[in-house]
Amino acid sequence: MSAESLEIAKTLYQTGKFAFENGQYREAVENLEKASALLARNSRLGGEVEIDLVTAYEAAGRTDDAIAVCERLKRHPYLETSKQARQMLYILKAPKLKRPSEWMTQIPDLGALPDNELKISVAATTKSSVQQKPKPTEPEFIDLSQVNTRDNRFIWVALIAIGLSISYLLWLNFSGTPG
Image 1 (cartoon, helix red, strand yellow):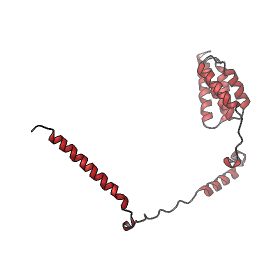
Image 2 (spheres, rainbow, N blue to C red):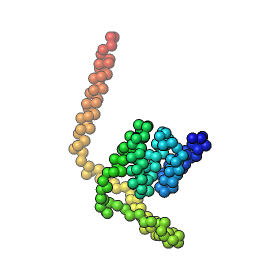
Image 3 (tube, helix red, strand yellow):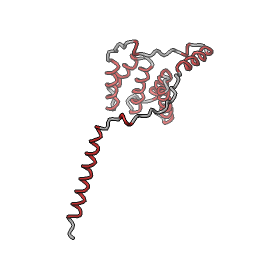
Image 4 (tube, rainbow, N blue to C red):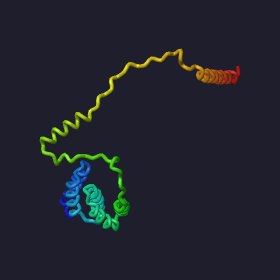
């Protein structure tokens, strides 16, 4: 592998990771597939690219492709890569649980709307989702004659105990020194 193709692969890898982090999964898959094709599959970097490719496949809804790559990576010469592949394969093959519809938030596909409707829809959603903040109220004053002071005896007991402890320590300090 030439140094030039290694640099191209690293650039494609970084571009793919950036696209994935920004939710552009199809673009991430394309860049990571190109980077993987340029690298030796048994290299450490090749394994890293393919591990990220697995997550991009899964995010793009291509679970079968993700499982196929994990199956291949289980036999990767780098222990960390094969360990990650086995863990990811376990997750990918786990049964999918049904979630109640009330647990889910439906996100409308704004890409399907024409440009003009999109602006109106976003403006309407923004206005309706903004809630009025409550006006600050004046602080409520407490009638001190109605405060329960019976529980305050503990404070006096604690203060007396602290005072006696300090007095005893001072007495020990001054009585112990030869005069």
